[in-house]
Image 1 (cartoon, rainbow, N blue to C red):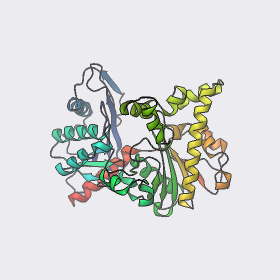
Image 2: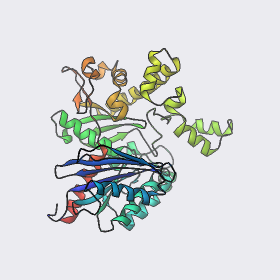
Image 3: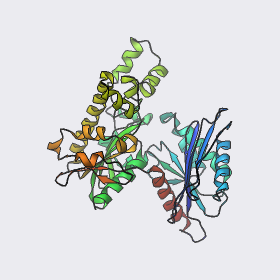
Image 4: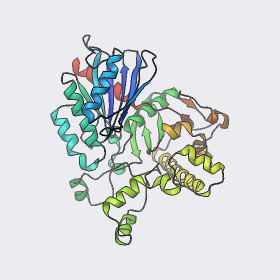
Length: 407
């Protein structure tokens, strides 16, 4: 890194009506601040800011925030109150989470007009995410046009998948014409967790084969061989794969035709059904695993069935990825459910002893913020809980790239 450049990176995750942010000091200072702006465009917009560097209390206020420009200006004001303003010479770059990079972007990329144009061209395959990501980028560039801005893509980690895993078995010319293939998502999390798991095992990432289970409201699995993704559960969109909070995951595509022909549902209605009204919430009316477990403890049969379907799909992917990898060194649970729901981890591994998977009940019951093993010493395959840190991963990739660019 150039001696004249600072060591701070601001990470922005811009949604359609929200902005999540963290300011990190890559010179060893850790997290300096974090926050969230939500309900952008409403009269009841909300900003919550936590100044970690000063150890101060979180600040929160509500009021109208018209657009992303106003949201980022509000964030800048909150940071400035802590002496961490966007005009600080210590700020080296801004890193942006971008959901879809297609086949074009295989690594973090410094943003220019050509990059923006390509992200925009990919909107048809990420209509819910890329427009919001673009808005955040354009707003941040307007606020600090002199500052390097870097796009870190959710799909990039999965671009190492072989064609045998990435292609669907449909007409090749049609697939290529419409960019239909399996891209995968949650890539920054899978990259971070697979490396952290290898470290936990005392291995170099290039030597470790890891199955990563990112289980949040959105959920995905990946098979990582020697630090490179060779398969992942999400596909063209984040709808494919595991049962999720509100998404169906895998199903027969003919269900869609049936709903159109027999149910007389429109494309948009089916899209809403499968993305927002399916998964756990469609099965039992709840998408919070804590509430589902509470209902199960009270004897609720619908909650039990939803949990069983969730676990059944999860086991299928664990088994499939054991087959894909051949040798598995570890399975890592991460994200909100993966890190906190001990019953999910227990049920996912139960009965898989023949695959070398064992769980220590006492270790599994322990909660913590650090990467840890929850398998006994005699387990052929390590089972781990590894808290994900997508913001740190984005900041690390951004800082490394800006350092390369400045040399």
